[in-house]
Image 1 (cartoon, rainbow, N blue to C red):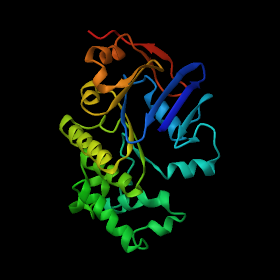
Image 2: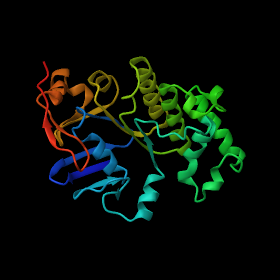
Image 3: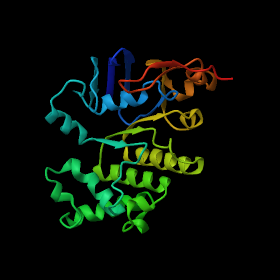
Image 4: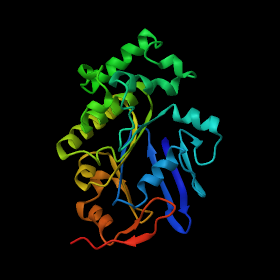
Length: 265
């Protein structure tokens, strides 16, 4: 069964055609890597998949619901089961690490106040600490989030996703802003959590080495198209490297132009 199904997805910003007929399926519990050079359309696709942007054409089904064309009420329902990990962590810096993780439970509650630290149930608070233990940051629970390193903040973001208890995780360039050591630690953690919890993962990356090390399958994008879609073991470094050669960059904002990149040497 396909948990995620994109079919003929097109997205434009003015005259710039960012997504051009994107189509793929991701079955339950599969970890897929969405790979491509910066500016190929990956982030725009992820925004469409979470309902933050809407394509002009095509459909994106998540657990059977078309998030490209559904009501806000239905979209909120779908999002309860979809955890997001962002490149910029998306934490509330002046709140504690514990509070940031606790707010991961917002998707499952109708009231904001039901999940705030003073009013959260004993069970919710205990589970938030469990999530911090899973990412080895329980000792930092009372620290302000903005006092942590970049790698630690991304681990808090993963703990927040665990708090949500989703069946699907969308991770948009989760290690792009981290140094190599922290990036590997975060990828190991994210991949381990997804495996242990039986989640379905779609993770965008532009680092070829990481893509080949993590993931059951690779979906390779170039200039708004899907160029590669197969199990990771059935592709090669040369094939994936071709995604970066002679690439046309589509900067994913309405005012940006299409700029040809130099061929990789």
